[in-house]
Image 1 (cartoon, rainbow, N blue to C red):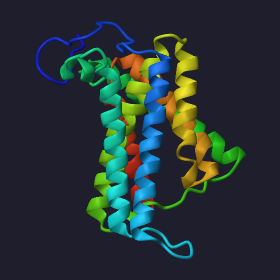
Image 2 (image 1 turned 120 degrees about the vertical axis):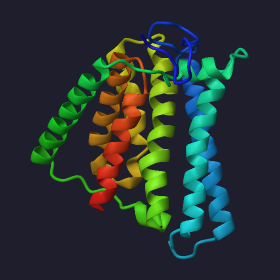
Image 3 (image 1 turned 180 degrees about the vertical axis):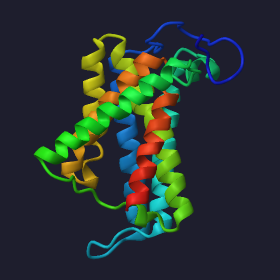
Image 4 (image 1 turned 45 degrees about the vertical axis):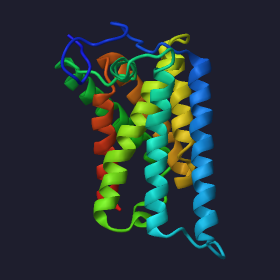
Length: 234
């Protein structure tokens, strides 16, 4: 039986979708997150004042990435806590719940589906070119922490838990998954346009995995695995 990550029964709706908000609130959350990211970036540029297209320092990049991840989590929790919802219930409504053993099979199906898409994409379009953002974070521990840990956790909470969860309150599963995946992939366009379609497919699969397992934790694990493999390959 499903429960949240803490002990005891899961608060909030017992059946998926757990979100108490709809597409409108999810859209507002997306706007707030993008606005926060823009403000953080603007402040970083104003402080560093890079000249002639120079990159931000590794310290600034680490701080910017950290604040961006925190913005995703905090804004998702704010949306999920509307109506003075206790934090444990808000966390459960975002999909941070236990999952049963059947989730392992769904994770395997998800991996197979993504690998099949990636292979077909490479065969038809070619190897996607993606900017190596890891070097911007300096030392390896920061790269691992931000890319393989912080990004998967914060992005799954935000894009699957908050955005897909809110869309799913009013929209069919496939449409809600597609919209959330388009947003997820589109916001990564700065790393390389050719990498966007695979990321859209990845986001779509992770949304379906969330619905099938009732938890975003399997998605966090797959997201972390994907980012770890990408980091090791760079």
